[in-house]
Amino acid sequence: MDSILGKDLTNNTIARQFKLIKKIGSGAFGEIYLVQSQSKSEYAMKLERSDNKHPQIFFEAKLYNYLQGQDHLLCNSKEGIPKIHDQGVDGDYNYIVMDLLGPSLEELFNKNHRKLSLKSVLMLADQLIQRIEYIHSKQFLHRDIKPDNFLVGVGSKSSRLYVVDFGLAKRYITKEGHIPYKEGKSLTGTARYASINTHVGLEQSRRDDLESLGYVLMYLLRGQLPWQNMKATNQKEKYQKIMEKKQETTPEQLCKGFPSELTQFL
Image (cartoon, rainbow, N blue to C red):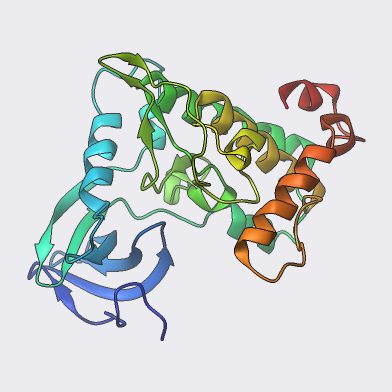
């Protein structure tokens, strides 16, 4: 079994109290397991190898906790941020324990035969914009906006969207002010939803998260994007072809047959 962690950890126990029941996903830098505590409560646990040269999990935990802070600016926005229940190191692994959530938008989209109504997508868009606006209000960029990184809650919170996987997040306001304009950056995020400026190698800012959101909304409405399934011999060539197709596809072409507000958004 291919694993970022080197092996399947099902049935192992971490921190003497969390039994790993099954693998439920992978993030930018780690793997996620359904775990059960000694009190039989269920959580999601994200793990990475502790010998990782660029550990991400504790940065991510710190950011979740920061976004969960009591000084949130938008009413109910922090409700879309999962809570961290525990974190630490156990042998070969760094781990964080967080709220167990339901399926991702990508999973729901596939279950729904890759078709969502305009009404459904606009209702999702309302929450998606709230989540991104909240993260930006806390001076961070997500930098990997995609359907896989928005999950619904469980039980009474099944209609609420949560944003996850902050492994690529970056502060855009520092003590010196807004991060400076830079060129020659490598692509960060997921090529399918990356902004054109990200493809070109420019430092990302808030507009890039929002452009990615625009692509996500059109993906959910159309069923696919024009630059999917590009044939290429390697990743570099594929990224180049995706970028060229994005550059030649106007917002009017992408949003044809849908409300003009979507064209304006892009």
